[in-house]
Length: 282
Length: 184
Image (cartoon, rainbow over all chains, first blue to last red; front, side, top):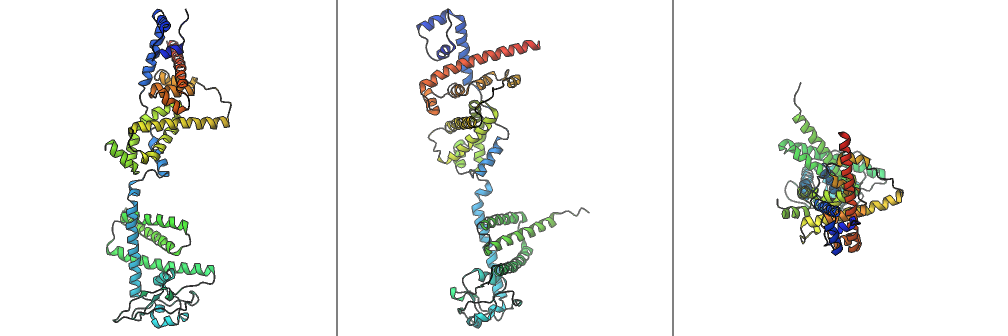
């Protein structure tokens, strides 16, 4: 008597046997045993348990998901709002600084409103306000004879103002005249002759700009600094943002200015934290 | 956090929710992928691929099916896709595959997971069908769709695979008995 094939027995796990197969199974203990065993196999297969994933499976997956931008950390989720807050704070900080400098220390080169009519004779503006003027198509006009003048600009270090257009002057009553921004016609544009000259000019303005901001920040922090750790985090966010922007426009002076300012402030804050936290172990 | 909330937050990219979903279903995903892969290293890669695919597609998950069913299908597809990709690469790089060495894995695995080992020993095509049908509960029609074969082919391959599996289990049990006898 030939036995049923294993494939036939495999089929009989689910299907009903035909008459011949049923007759054989009733007569053959070995084939019945095989069928029972195979039925147990199939039952056991259906009951196989789940398997523990690799212990570091999540870490590897998380890196990949982060790389693909499929998950956002808590910081990233709130990053948009936080970055807007930081940007707003930065604007207030910079804007306030500039406004303060312009109203309190308008450079001598900006003071004579009448000079606007003869711009070719004027050296370019110096200091933070000058930096802003260079970055803006608008001209800074106004008289400020009543405010201290900035240090004299060495000859040859700065280009002359070449914009022939007269600037608008807004004379105001009272001891202090406001400095206003006018239209394109009043721009005091720096027009370097060479690329190197332009670069030197930008570096000089940035250095002054940074010095002014740093001084302001030191005064501000002395008046009541906030949480240095939070400030560090905010500054780091700014640095990352400006760094990303510089990757796109590496020579943009405005972005460079923000970036360098943030770097300087971060370093200053780090020094401040280190000094505050270092124990006097000796 | 219940599953619906977890899914909703994960759809928005919430890292904690995504991790929660992973922890809930990682054993399930790993099991199906591991059994289809027949190999631990491959299974890890394919399981990760499955999760990445799942989280890519998660924003489009509308809850028409249970999440576990949806995820399971992705895991199966990912493993089958991984198998096809690997087969193509291997066939290009090294058409002469060496014989598989079974001696090493018999030492410490056979006694505890003889069934799993027997599954690993099956030829890939047979293993896929046994895993999908007998382990995961797919119908022959579904398997036919997944593998691009006729349902009848799936059925006949399943019977051959079960027969092969029985033979492997018997050989494994004989080997175990022999090993036990040698120790005595």
